[in-house]
Structure formats: C-alpha cells, structure tokens
Image 1 (spheres, rainbow, N blue to C red):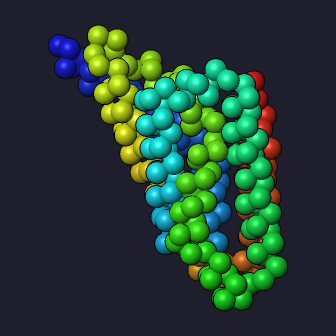
Image 2 (image 1 turned 90 degrees about the vertical axis):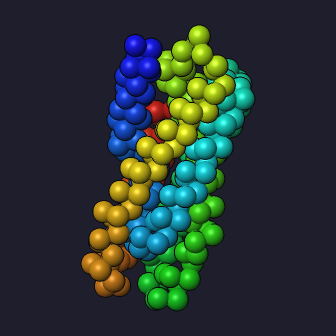
Length: 210
C-alpha cells in the first residue's frame, strides 16, 4: 500500500511539473527564439545547459541553498534582477543580430558552447527555479522517509520532465528554420521574437516580485 501511495504521489508530482513547464516562461521563450532562428542543434545545446542549471539548483535545494535564497530578500532580489537583466540582454542581442543576416554572422555567432552557457546562466539566475524546489517539491516529500534522498530523486524527475518538454519545443520550433532562410523574413522573425523575449522579461519581473 505504501508503495502504491508513493507511485500516486510521484504521478501527481510529474503532472505538476508538466503543468508548470508548459506555462510560457523564460526557458520556453528562449528556446523558441533560438531554435526557430538558428536551428535544432543550437536549441538542443541550450536545452542541455538549462537541464544542468536546473540540476544544480536542485542539488542546492537538497542542501538547503534554496531555502536560504527564499528566506533572504537580498539574495532573492539579486537573482531576480540578474535574471531579468540577462533576459533583456538576450532580447537585445537577438535584435542586434537581426541587422546582419549573412551566413557567417548568423551561424558563426551561435556555437554549441555559447548557447549551452546561455541556457545554464538563464536558469542559475532564475529565482523561480529555486522557489519551485522550496514551495512545490517539499509537498511531495514524506517526512517518515529520508528527506535528502527524496529531494534529490524528485529534483532529478523534475529535470527529466522539464528537459523532455524543452526538447519538444526545440523540435517544433526548428521546423520554422526553412522559412527563416530568407534574409528579410529572418530579420522580421528575429526582431519579433526578440520583442517577445523582452516582453517575457517584463512579465518575469512582475510575476516574481514579492
């Protein structure tokens, strides 16, 4: 019976993760922008960076770091505004790149290492990731069982679910690449998506405010 209850709790946790991840946010917007404008290869590299960022935050949560961030307004606000600034920089970078559509400029600027790092930093500076591990994940932890082990396992499950959804976004957004091979359409699309990313940054600023 306890094993069945554990499976039910795990299923509820997975469903919660799915609902949270399919809600439009910084990761979804960034991956859509990157994959549609540059291709799936860059999108998948960024997805790996995001996964590593989520995993690092999850391990930090298991060790009590997320609780510290959640209880400290200074640390929370520092991460929050750092994340907002980084998203705005990504939006500006995409807008600026739209002025140059030559293959050398468009393709050479997006190395796997660069987009991996961007995905990683975006999540390390995302306080909502830390808050998820503090406010949501503990509700699925059984006090009678080892808390650290449960936290680590649930963190891995969350990263797996998030990565699967992000990979799906990359696959779908990447189908738009042939349309974007035209320089004029590419410029319009890049700037439109950059504006959308800027709007997400503004939404992020309001939605994460305490």
